[in-house]
Image 1 (cartoon, rainbow, N blue to C red):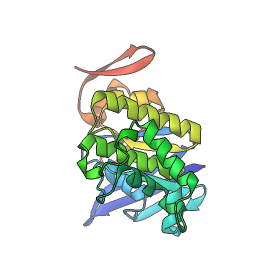
Image 2 (tube, rainbow, N blue to C red):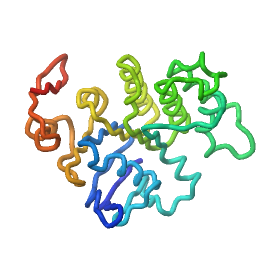
Image 3 (cartoon, one colour):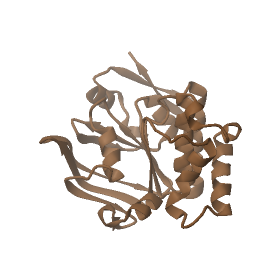
Length: 250
């Protein structure tokens, strides 16, 4: 399975936000979209999930143009977690079980229930299963939203700043779990991130946006002091630590 984006363009009120965006992400890939605030990272994710409809270009998954997919088929192909998720007044278990909605015809099957329970256990949410989602903290609610997307088992997972409301321990736990599930389940993940060092721990592919266009795309080699200065306007040093790159602001 491959997600392919070809010449995507999108704008608001006559102002072009994204221009000629083209890239591909294959099964097993974890890709990070990087760039400053307002550059169009969240808008790009919403176009990939058809929340916003691109004005030019094509988005295909497994060779199928997403414009031709019905709602359930799109949900079986692509899962999405927004920066801030809202829930009805329901239990944590039922909120996660909603991720199985694209597959449920009459009632949840035993497999649906087991998948929801398995994701809760993996994200250390089992103790909250019968609690109301609205009783949870913002960080806990974010983990529930991620659990719901994982229970959905789509081909591609889209995460908009998934760790923004999490403490350091939970940030590392969540990105590790997402990365493991992507590799085990032959999915792909596309994540917007501000923390470059966290992105380097998570992703193997990077898409850097500047002025609504792709500045650079590729592996960790594209994250250089020069590219970070051009995209973020910040001088940094790139050091090696434990076999990985570390970005240090000067």
